[in-house]
Image (cartoon, rainbow, N blue to C red):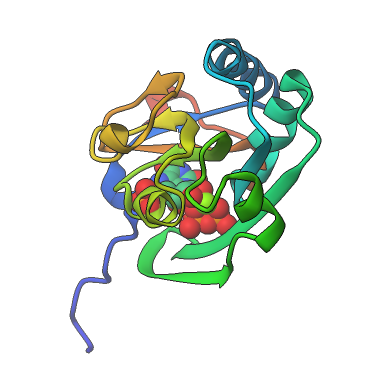
Length: 175
Ligand SMILES: O=P(O)(O)OC[C@H]1O[C@H](OP(=O)(O)OP(=O)(O)O)[C@H](O)[C@@H]1O
Ligand SMILES: O=c1[nH]c(=O)c2nc[nH]c2[nH]1
Ligand SMILES: [Mg+2]
């Protein structure tokens, strides 16, 4: 309606920014794998797409796991969370490897925020190990292993979503 303030996106509501470079992300994924190496071995990695694909590739490479499956879930349209949509479920072959409950499977995602995505996948694989690179407080209880916690009012900017651009000096009012 005319005159109404536009609804803020999740990213705008977050307020604080946590930009992550490719280099930092690779290091954080390696650090995550050091921890996961103590927990495994794992029969397969289940990547929550799309964000989980990048850490899943790095973690699987480091752990020597060659079976990788996806569970395809969409929730944030750009940066606003809508209803969760399962676009593709876990394959029969991966389900079999996890004995139907996910035992010995490793679920990987880039982050947990509200925890809605993680909760849905945990329900599909209750005995799997769930790992994320980053965690916000609301989603943290759902995760078995993660590397860095950021506050709930922080938006994480991943390298595949961003590009280098000019940033004005602080004294000119830049955040
Ligand atoms: O804990 P939650 O509040 O559920 O949010 C976390 C999820 O949100 C992002 O995925 P998104 O749905 O944006 O899709 P994408 O991975 O394809 O970018 C992120 O990759 C996590 O999967
Ligand atoms: O790029 C992203 N950064 C975030 O902090 C976030 N939270 C949910 N979904 C997200 N996507
Ligand atoms: Mg995702």
